[in-house]
Figure 1 (cartoon, helix red, strand yellow):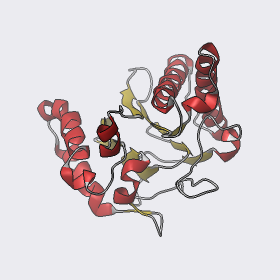
Figure 2 (figure 1 turned 45 degrees about the vertical axis):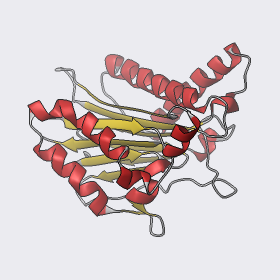
Figure 3 (figure 1 turned 90 degrees about the vertical axis):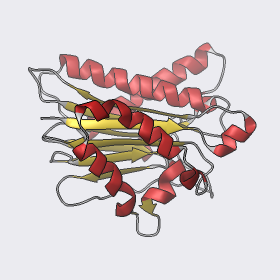
Figure 4 (figure 1 turned 180 degrees about the vertical axis):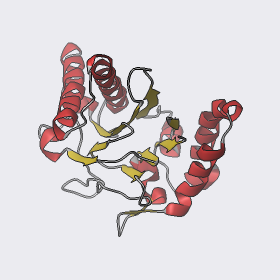
Length: 254
């Protein structure tokens, strides 16, 4: 009993035109220990375009969060997903970025990035978010968007994990149920995936992905990431957005 996961990022056409690399980073995995329940982990970070090293910041954020989860899963007898746990995870992310910035003689804001995460057991789902992008989850009642994507003080601005008030703006939702479906994505596809007026999931966007995850054979699983990356880089998507795009998905296969 576990989740099937797939995740991919694709550079936006705006970055392709300037020869810039993708500034999104993501991680999606299921920890499996025979002595413990499986643990679903999905992280997505989007480097700020205004930051000199935003893409590196996104990579550092994912690296730190993944290490934090791995250490806790390896040593914790019981994995308690709480608001405090989410704060500790973000503190680990910030410590990593600030340390690298200091080593490089730079400012933490030079590595500014958003950060979104879903960590779940078969009994609990924790969602956390700083910045824009979105998290869509179904814990048995249909797709919902428990956290409203964050906008900054001015248009086209948002919050970042490197901001001084990051812990204050961190949004955390803990659901006492297993996630049947999960989608985490950067703001590059936010307007394709969400109804921005009502802050609801655009169900027709997600249905094909979850259908594929539900029906994929073991032989097909190896090709899912390539297919997802191909979709994110398709003309149909690029006509709607020129930003970098990341989408990470999970489906409970029992």
